Image 1: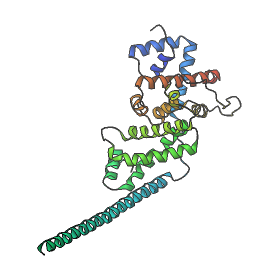
Image 2: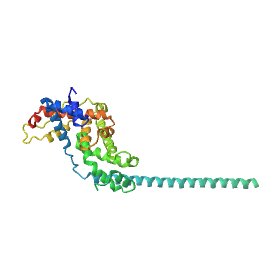
Image 3: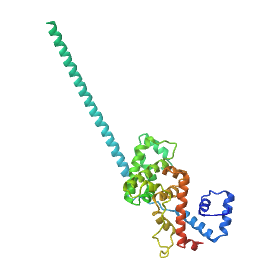
Image 4: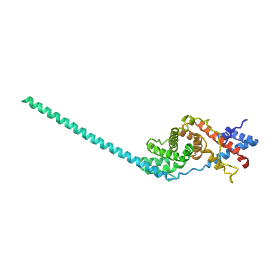
Length: 118
Length: 188
């Protein structure tokens, strides 16, 4: 390994180099103050990134989301009920209209039958 | 409660125990908020997008396949919801977001020289807030959520090699900043 660049140092840090390559990097780095500086800085960045604090949400978001879910579920249920009621009313109306039409037809046929007998 | 796996919670929610979903919210809200804060750079937007993401995830639970991890699936929802928000704001277009060459020169307001304790953690934490959204997301998912490069790629819908390029560039940029501030010379 003749060239140790930032890419190699990153791979070294992530343990992506073979044992031989890693040893070679260590040897080269130990003989170069500039590379040593870069590797130390990279290690420091990696260590700091592992310690980044996780921010906390300032209010009770869990309850808020659960309330929104409940509200959504309720409105879905209400929507379902509304659809069922509307379709039931529509069905009854259709049946009533069909019954009325059937009654009218039978009346007309009876009238025509009696007029033909006369 | 910490011992219950995500899949067990999901199964319970699917079986009608809707309130168990709060366990998943408690488990992921802060880490997802951290990612959104870095992506959107606005706390209120981050909170809104997070709520929307949890609602989307809840209604999509029936489509969730247990072969994949809930965290990866959920973070994909969070990431896509944030991207939609960013695109809507017209601050950054999707094209800009998909470029991996958009890492600007990083600067930090944190002053090593004047601060009593040279706090490198604070310095790094402040500086990653200034990274482009894509870079900040990779850093967050890799370091805070402990995801592998493969999982990060799955969340962001990019290849593993791209994830590594972004990760290395971000670290290099931060490293160069530390060197330029003479921080490392002091600890050597």
